[in-house]
Image (tube, rainbow, N blue to C red):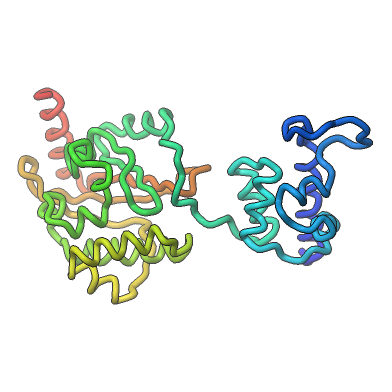
Length: 279
């Protein structure tokens, strides 16, 4: 597909979104309008861009807008997250950077998905690797996140802090290096923001081990892998993990752990069943 065709797709999308907006919703009189929606100059003013340049953009002559301009256009056109992502894909052939400051909690539906995984520990983490949701299996097998303050429910802090989570990891150094390399890869892909830098600085001050591993500059995808944990009741468990994106929430990732062998599955199920009976 040619660049001109790409730009025309962008222009058509902008025109379509503009036509679907009600001037009254923005306090703009809707009288004496030949066509529905906002005028080009009104969108340009809301986005703080030149009306001439915005006109060129709709006509396929405006060049490649920056991420900042696209964000302003998305706000000016009142785009939702899916529409904003589509705007970036048309203009820059890539999705927008991850929004680290997402204020919305996980949906009840996503929590029910976690809860339905009765014998598979599962967590939802943010782009900064803060754990924001988990199921009973994760609380019983991995870490009881409910007993931690929200600011301490961070995977890297738990890995490199003096915590039971670290003590239960059989291959701590290997798993820690894998986690740091995956974190570096994800943050580089999403954008090395001030929040990322602040978190890295905080953990580096408290953990020379983290600081040393971070300086290695190793990168890898988190994807899938094998984790070995030592549980006081169930003994040593081998858990395979798989990570998934949460559709419509680029700031969240879902990680599901499953027993690696039938023996692991049997001991994990017995552990979870006994804890539920005791509770």
